[in-house]
Length: 126
Image (cartoon, rainbow, N blue to C red; front, side):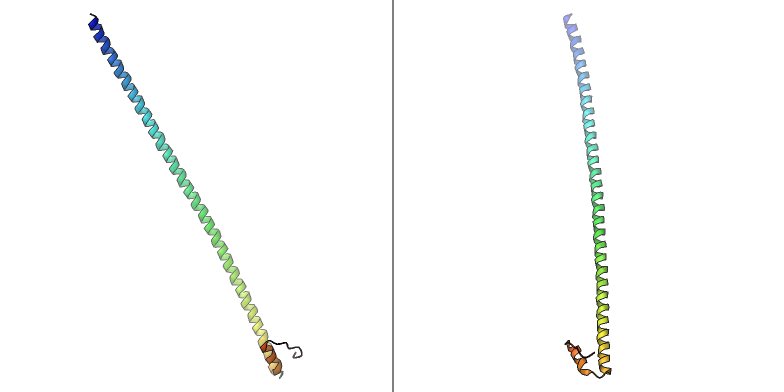
């Protein structure tokens, strides 16, 4: 008689152990899936942040390039203006020298013209 109860009790305890084992496995599996999902989410967030940083860096780089280009264009424009001023002032100077030479030539004062051409002082030639 005790053998029969012992057998039933052993069988009952075995079933309870199996049930607890299944529940534990299910719980472990659920935890494992939760952790995997959390890891996937974390990786996605990191990837998203990385993309955002890259886009931000790209925008900053584009802004820097635009600034550099604007400064280069401004510098080039100023260079052109100064070159044009230098050309116009040198043309005006050449015109002035040419007029003086013509005036000196037509007034018959060739010695003054020669002095001016050589870059010497021409005090009493005017």
